[in-house]
Length: 148
Length: 148
DNA sequence: AAATAATCGGTCTTTTTTATCCTTTTTCAA
DNA sequence: TTGAAAAAGGATAAAAAAGACCGATTATTT
Image (cartoon, rainbow over all chains, first blue to last red; front, side, top):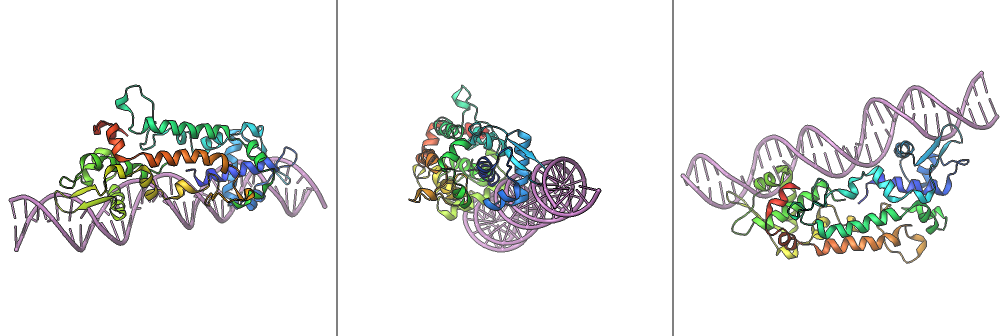
């Protein structure tokens, strides 16, 4: 459903939300080791989020990453949209293009009407799920994260 | 959400359901041309379904493919499971392994409980959507299919 | 029987995704 | 001031997904 890259991204952002702060940054080497993600690959992913404004970074020893926004303002929807692209939420289930809800029924894909209700559930879930909520549900215990 | 291969597969099976019969088979070249799918790649996909028992094939001139089951007995769930694998419906949203609903809450991934409700909606939809229903909803008019 | 047309199956190539390597830049601390 | 630690960035490599090629086989038509 989600790409490997995207799953890495979500787990890393949760981890940074738990362990990182402006004063006490989380660095890529440790995140990668803890979460079992290839470190150089993770670095690339984190760089994307810095460019997109979800993370801030500090170079040098004691450097690392921390959330650029409040954790309740970073949703799964934001993350997936950045990594897997907005198409994840928009493209036709069985076609290549957008599943535009064109008004004339003849133009619509044959699964559009029935699937769009389900898709809406998915989108709503991704929009409602945010880093803060996840961390709270984990009881601020990062051990669960290490086994995914 | 679904792989390109899987989308090709669904569209091809719908097309075969509409145009193919045991006496009057649909052949890969025409299906590929009509649906805009690379013909050799489509052949590979259709071969998989022959092996899995969803399609039957006949060689030689006037040969081609037709459904091995009643169209109401081929669901989107069946197709996705064969092409994208059962993992599509089972693997953890943000992890690599299975999202087994282990009884001790500490072992579960932090999005499991909330996402599993959504996942169930998705699974139910895929199981309820079948080739016959789709064809009927298209009014047996294949033109819609050609534009996806 | 021969020619033709179609699937099958294997291999090969291309593209995308995932992962690694290596160098540069920045910052901290001894 | 120098060395180490960390992010940033470019280039390359490996793996997976998507797509193309071709010979073998089989069935129909002539």
